[in-house]
Image (cartoon, rainbow, N blue to C red):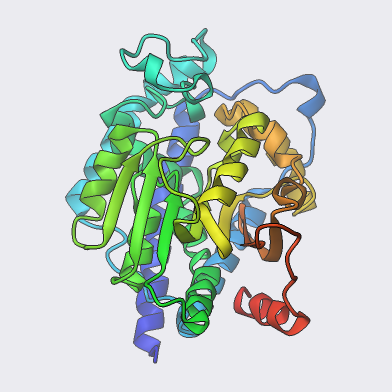
Amino acid sequence: MMTIFDKLTFETIQSARVGWFFGQKLLAARLSRPMPLPKQLRDRPMPDRNRILADLKALFDQDWRNIEAGYYALPRGEFGNPLTALRRSLDFFADLATVEATRHGTHKEVLLDTPLNSTYPRYYRQKFHFQTDGYLSEASAERYDHQVEVLFAGGAAAMRRQALVPLRQALAEHRAERLGRPPQLLDLACGTGVFLREVKGNWPRLHVTGLDLSPHYLAVAERTLAAWSRVRLVEGAGEAMPFGDGEFDIVTCIYLFHELPPRVRRRVVGEIRRVLRPGGTLILVDSLQTGDEPDYDGLLDSFPVLFHEPYYASYIQEDLNQLMSPDFSPLGHFSTYFSKVLSYRRKPDGGSGSEETAQAAKKRQIASR
């Protein structure tokens, strides 16, 4: 049972986070030169600061309602050690000059100078978000989460948490099916482990596996998740997973699809189908797409230029339900700030599978609100 004190604590912490990260976002913008947009993107309507802050507030309101409803626990220690937060902030601004040089200068789209380049697919060796070293250094891994929180003005953690709502439903269904074994969860492209930290904070006995291509990000994830048992971290690609058929009951995929070329996106879906048992649940969190929030469409179209997302333009036009067809049935979806949450059920082998009943689908939609 949440108390008024819990709510005040939550609101105070989230307000402080927004002030901390949004302040850095504004300062970074003042220290940076504007990116020139192609002619076809100029003068497009964009959400103004008031709209963005209103949507950010709506995200936190939903976050609190989920906590109050018992879908997941009140987040603890989001700021962590104040000295660590300050150090990360100083590192972020120290790296800003390098990022600016990359944004406005001539740079290699592919990181050919890394000694490990031959072990990574070409699409992965991009300087995503103009970040120094892309995903291929310890320094990048250490500053990544801070960069993302600055980008989304302190809302990134709350957006990720929305995936815990369909996850709770999936775990309840697993128990109801009485499969005779504990559920197994795979977090695909787990990065630094921050989403798995939310998962383990709510279900500490759940068996979880994190898969990521970057050993540097996995090293951070190992520290992030050191307090919990039943955690396995594996280095590998989503399009060629080192797991057995039907090994997992639930697959989560947080902000991966927009960073994949279309052909790789399809291979990843095929691999998810292979490693997820029939009847298992797939949960996606990713960027809004064209038409989800029409007022944001101009910003979405500009995003690849402003933040160097090489495959984002194809993602925002991708029909995700079609991408998942015919092996997955859509279970529910909802938008939250800059993101959307979608869940799917893996159909049985050898046919299209039976669809959920209308009553079950309705329950999922209610749980996702």
